[in-house]
Amino acid sequence: MVSYGIDFGTTNTAVIECLFTEHGMSTTKYGESDQPFPSLVALHAEKPPIFGMEVKKRRGQLKTDGYTIISSFKTILGGNELIPVGDKEYSPLEITAMFLKYIKSSVELKSGSRLEDAVIAIPVDYKPQQRNALREAARLAGITVRSFVSEPSAAYIYCQKQIAGTSNAAVFDWGGGTLDVSIISSEHGVIHELAVAGKRLGGNDIDKMLARHLHARVMQESGVPKSFEDMSDSERDQIMDRSEDAKKRLSLEDFAPVRLMRYGGKAMIRHSISLDEFQKLTSERIEDAVKVLYQAAQKANISLGQLDIILMVGGSCEMQLIVKRLEEIGEKYHVPVSRPENIQWAVAGGAAILSGKNPSYKLQDDFGVLLSDNSVYPIFEAGQSVPCTSPELSFGVVEDTTNAVFILVDGKKNELERMVVPIKGFTAEGLRLNASIGADLIAHVNIRSNYAERMGIETSVNQLNFSYCVE
Ligand SMILES: Nc1ncnc2c1ncn2[C@@H]1O[C@H](COP(=O)(O)OP(=O)(O)OP(=O)(O)O)[C@@H](O)[C@H]1O
Ligand SMILES: [Mg+2]
Image 1 (cartoon, helix red, strand yellow):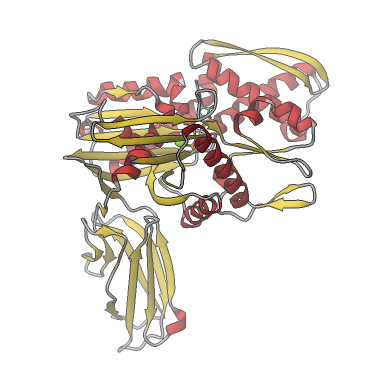
Image 2 (cartoon, protein in one colour):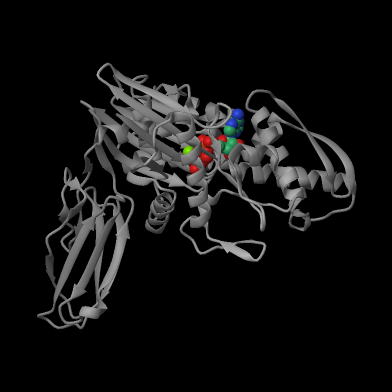
C-alpha cells in the first residue's frame, strides 16, 4: 500500500510517499533537484503558468517577460485578496489549486502511482477558513485530504525512531512564514499533543528586516535617500533575494558579501554584512521565537525541565543565533537539543506515515463550558474519538440580563473562546448548545435561546489538541 503526506509550506512544499509492505516501511521523497518544490507560481496573461524550481531559477527573466510571480500564497489562502494578472484576477485558492495540481502531476510522473489522497500538515493556528480553502484547493487539484495534522506533530512522528525512549518532546518548527511549537508526549505508539503555540514569524520576516537594513545603508552611502517602499518591485525583489542568500551564508560563516546590480540608480553595489551585525539586527525576533517555546510549555502545564528533548526543524532553525539560544536553554534545563537530518522532509514524512496508518484521532483534553461556580461542564471529554457530535445540551439563565456569556475552555480551564449570546431575559428562558468536531480538527459550537431562535450564535475553536495512534 502507498500513502502520501504533503507539507505545504510558505516557501517549500515537500511530498513523501510511504510504501508499506510486510517487511516494513520505505519512503520516497518528491521535490525538484533533491529539494522540496519551491512554493512559487508564475502567471502570464497569455502564456501557460510556470511552477516551482523553474520560477525560482528564472525569476528575474520571467518578470522581464511579463510574468507575475506569486510567493507565500499559503499565508493569504482563505482570505479575500485577489491577484491581478493581465485583465484577470486570481484568488489565493485558485493559485494554491494550480500549484497542487502541478505537484500532483510531477509526483505521479516520477512515482508511477496516483496521488489521489494525502494527509496535509498545517500550522497549529491555521484558521477554519484557511483549512476549508486548503481542502477545497486540494479537491480542485484532484487530491482528497484524508485528514490534517499539525506540522510539528508530523515532524515528531517522522523523527520518532531517532528519538526513541523519550516521552516528552518540544518540537520547534521554524519555517518561512510561521513558527510552530508543539509539546508532545508519546507512549505505546500513541502521540499526545499536550499543547501547541504558534506565531506568524518566519524566515521571510527576517529577510525583510535584513533587506531594509541593507537598503538603509546603501542609501546612506549614496547620499540620495529613497525609501524602501519607493524602490521598484524588481529592486525590492533583488534585495530580498540577496538578503536571503546572505542570511543563509551567515548560518555557516561569520561574514557574507552582498552584491546588488542596478540598484537605486547604481550599476553595481558591493556590500557585506557580518554575523555580529546580523545577530544584533535580529536578536529581538529570536527572543520572540524563544518566548513561543516557553508559552507552549506553560500551556501544557509543564516546565522545560520536564522535557526529554527539544527537536529543531524547519529552515529557519539553521540560523546560528536560534541554535545558540535553544542550546543555552537546553543546558540550563538539562534537556538535549536535536536537529534531525532531513529536516526539510520531516513534516511531509510524518504526514505520509499518518496517512498510511489511517490513525484514529482522539481529543487530548476535555473541552467544555466554564460555569458560574468555576467548574467545567464538559461538551466533549478527553479521549473522545473525532469526528464527533455532542447531544444537545441545555442551560438555564440565572440572571436578568440580555446577554449570556459562555466561556469555552479546555480541561485546564484555559479560555479558548468567549461567546456572547443575545437573549430575551425571561426567567424560564433556556439556552441550547450544539457542538461538533469535524475532520478539519475544529470544534464548531452553536448556542441559541429557545425564545430567540434566530438570535443564536456560532463559533469555531481551532486550538484543540489531539492524540494520534500510529501503531
Ligand atoms: N541555511 C539557512 N539559514 C537560514 N535560513 C534558512 C536556511 N535554509 C533555509 N532557510 C530559511 O528557512 C525558510 C524555509 O524553511 P521551511 O522550508 O522549513 O519553510 P516552510 O515549510 O516553507 O514554511 P512554513 O512552515 O512557515 O509554512 C526560508 O525563510 C529560508 O530562508
Ligand atoms: Mg514548514
